[in-house]
Image (tube, rainbow, N blue to C red):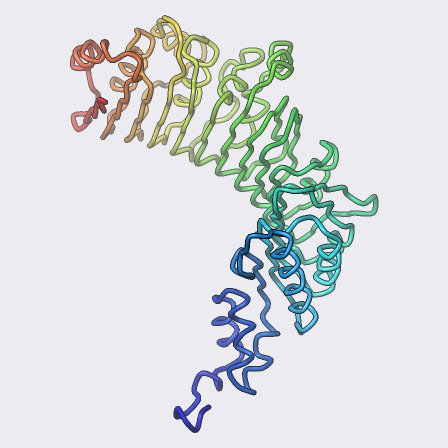
Length: 420
């Protein structure tokens, strides 16, 4: 090939550069380079990253045939492969739970595996084989729609930094044990869990994402957390459990995260934080917290409003605030601000707040009081975007007239009223 076309410069590149080229190709195309010439016959079989996605086999009308072709391809791929495999990823909807995957995981556990991603089709859930726990060098683990049971001899993934579990069947005790036994864990994502009460011990955790039906959440040893996103769904059983709780959820969940930089709460998150006894003045000041996003806040609930105000007034360097409001009834807020200042000595000046976005506003007095408070106590505010609720079109003009009257601590503050 080199004589006819000229010097074969690509084939003579260092193996490390050739591998960096091959891993950027779909795995099937990388394997096909073996037909280019005798020099290329075995260059592909030392690549350390293997991704089995939808491009690996041609899609067809019969999913069973496609699945069989895919299994055959992976079997041959691993049989011919030589050397370590640092990353192995399956994200293919045609592949269902099958015994061959157990063999693949066993093979990978003996080949210095560092990253494993398993996302199979919408069939029977795959039961993770125990040999996975022999992957001592694992740094990233992503499991989707799987069953996971920890062996009695499991001592933890000592190198694991990222753990993502999506619709994984695992006992509450096992998931807490798994988290606490991974001492280097930095990023944790748990989604679609049902009625889970969870206590998290992770001293090096930086990023936390939770989504599901949570009966209880507790952060006991997470001092380094910088980013939290929580979406909580509510069932009748969980709602009843909330009503019976007396401990302060705000302190239990956010009382030990002084380095927090971003907080996003969805669905019933502020409701959860509002449950329990009044914590008084918070034991922590969020000096690094710059972004707060709270969605579907119920302004008919005095305790939820207090949660919002505690977060705002305990974050002296807050720069961006976003709140969406769920439908609610009339309630005045002026007395709440006074109580916060008089009872707990909280400074209500938001010295760094620059961006505010408020959505689904109805224009009722308690919401207007919140806007008035933010405008009057934000000396460097640049923009406040207000999106009214689509069901109260008739009150939009009234909202605008009232907004014009509010005093602004910032001469640069611009109010953007997004009218549909």
